Image 1 (cartoon, rainbow, N blue to C red):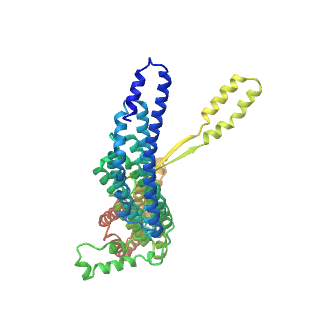
Image 2 (cartoon, rainbow, N blue to C red):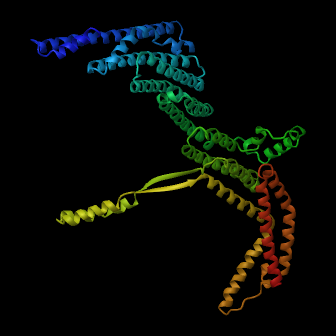
Length: 557
């Protein structure tokens, strides 16, 4: 370059000499061949060095398929030995790059050759390293593998940014960005099969939390100089993990919650609660400040504990919108299993146990899902084709106009039919959390009504008949007719009322104590507020019914 540049400058300025144009062409051809030799020298050096490193790794892989972390350290794949021979050449090309386009093209070609060889070496070493990690991780430990791969990726990106500055000034930032982003995407492609093989929800949730917290929110925040290269690839890894988690979660909901088949001991209520109460009253448990988790779960129906633990694992591992849909589905199926178990227990042990079992579990479920900052709602969208059916039924008259030559009327009619027959998009928003609340309210009402039936059935029958009779009397009076008095009716004679009050007192003595003991057994441990509210509701309803009875007695007797 030192010899050809002055010659080129002279021949370019000496335009008056004989055959100067021919000499200028020959000089440019010689100059181009010289630059081609420079490029060939650079490419051959880079390529031979890369091939030698690849042969070393292949030989090591043939002897032992295990690669240590030290074997893939950036110092083992660096091109430092080429710096003394290539850097002076690149410096001369960079100094002349602004003078002529040929030098700029030569510099671009050298940078491309450098990046291509680096990419070839790193792709080979990266694939070999991931294969080695997978081969030496049985059973498959996705978290450990991913942590090592990301560590290798971060170290290698830092090394590449440092090493390229030893060869080129200024650094080809656009080419390096594309190269390192492609290298990071290759790491994502290598890790993806590992993610897709994972099947345990706990492992996938831990992996998602690790990628988001440790890598995206910690390492890349502290090393912002490489975030532009690897953030997209790591974000895609996180999306793959979350996609796998969504699939495994849906399978889990189907197998462990929706299709849950209870054992005999799962439906053995209230025996389960009595055993827990005996354990809780033991001296060992009384010395504990807080009950153990196993003691808390021991009297829960299995699907309740499974659902709550499942949701707690997914809460921080999935985006809020996706978690809300999965949580709504899990909550809906969990409620269904509780209702199913309640019906079985009610058929085997009595309606009281069945209703109180459902009430207890719904109250616990409502309390335990309250910390989740979501509505447990889903939006179901569907197309309504009813307007399309009606519109196409009117198409025959429009087609008839077309065959009778009424083109304008037919075209306007067809356009009107098409506009009016387009299907409508309907959206239906449902909330599993509200469904749990409604089911709890409905169950509470059934418990109160059952308590009334147990203790006040004769009294309620009398009140119902008396209310019907008095309403009939009001309608008869409006028409001018006269009816008999209430005390003269067969169902309301003083003797019948005496027997009714005696029967009510007997039923209350017989059933109420046992009923409230069952209420206390089911609701006292974890649903104390629910127990208090139920007591107050039953007391108020009893007082209302007795007040109605004594009002009628005082007025008509």
